[in-house]
Amino acid sequence: MSKLLSAELMANVGRRSQPRQELVARREIRKYAIATGQRQKKYLDGDEAPPMFHVALFWDVVELDQLTPDGVSIDSLLPKFPLERAMAGGLRIEYHRPIMAGDLLTATRTLTDIYEKQGSQGPLIFYEVVMEVVNEKGEPVLTEKTTRILR
Image 1 (tube, one colour):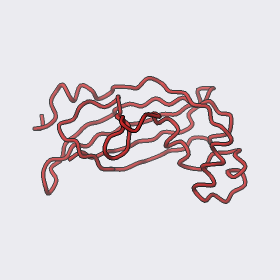
Image 2: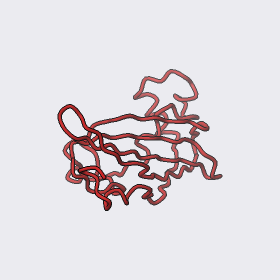
Image 3: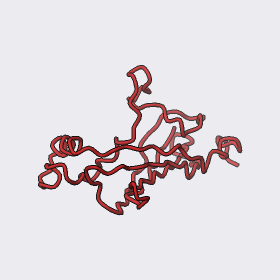
């Protein structure tokens, strides 16, 4: 057992969020396409969502005083970690089918791993969360794996 990762903390591996549904609106696709400088007609018309459209789709909408100092909402899936300064560790997205206007998407997030490494300035905790998104037919739309580093 590592110095920072107790058995109680490690027991959270495998924890899943409640499924969350969102309806993909043509207007939201169009706004995202314009904001990200897309040029393809299918994106600008709002027929199909460009890559990365889904990233904020399932985020909580909260009041400003409910955000952490770095501007994100508190993630109820995660346990309280002994280290708190968060950094991006990686993002891998596998697209299975396009996101289309009118799709009713369901996302479920799972805490898949927690591990510790020794950095040059002290211990680091890594955790990984996998989000699986399916459409209303239950067909996979995308799988996203996020790695975060705490120091």
